Image 1: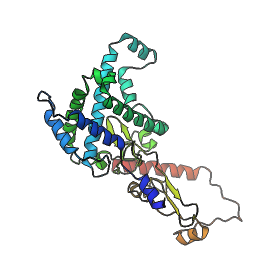
Image 2 (image 1 turned 135 degrees about the vertical axis):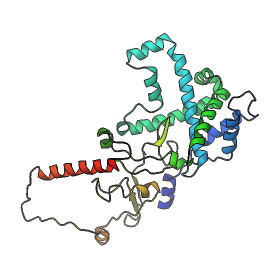
Image 3 (image 1 turned 90 degrees about the vertical axis):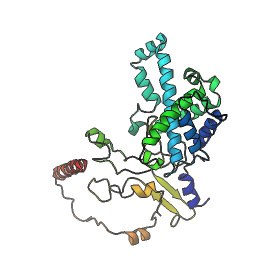
Length: 328
């Protein structure tokens, strides 16, 4: 494989889970939608809109958006009906009480909304992947699923989810998956300082395709929140070990400088989102030729000490910059 083909693999947005789910849904309603189905028009619209969907969750795809909404509402519906049934069982309630939990918290955890993403990103990504696999298992063999049976059967549960999904889909001013899945990369300081998302230390809003089931990993925040919440392949590095000088590529979000007021704070974010992986300068000679600025250290004199003053100035400056950015 070449470097270019490796980059294409990393950026692939094909979800075989999406393709199979839509194919199975079409089979469920293969003989037509029953006349007594309350969501008949919504189901017919969804089946028509998803015709020929190849499972690619690209930026401009509206089919990807509708699929994600249907899948999201289907899982939420199974959870709601199933947990309500479980809540009536005293032994389940006793176990939840013993562990300091309730049905609402359990629903959040199953939906992927009960974790600190900064500490559990890999766990969340694997969790969502298993969730999609389990949904496919239930749709393949609905009679073997207690959750589907409790929700009234596969056709009824899917129709209900499609009805909610289409209603949500029609309210979107921009129905493309890149926009629905878009979000501002979050910084822990913004949340800790009680600033609004997308302000303070956060990066700018960026559109992204893919999800947790595509090689171009870009998981949703939770089952009921389809904005992207991170990526397991945030740093992209490729190297041709036979030609390190000319065959290395590297890019990292968000920027090359961690200073909030710097013009380079988020300068790589859009290039990273676009799938660009620039050449990495490797040899000292090439680094010197490419350098726009050079820093020189005086190794002959003793380093000067200014105490805490520089740190105080930097701290105050960062705080002021964050507050000004939040007001904008």
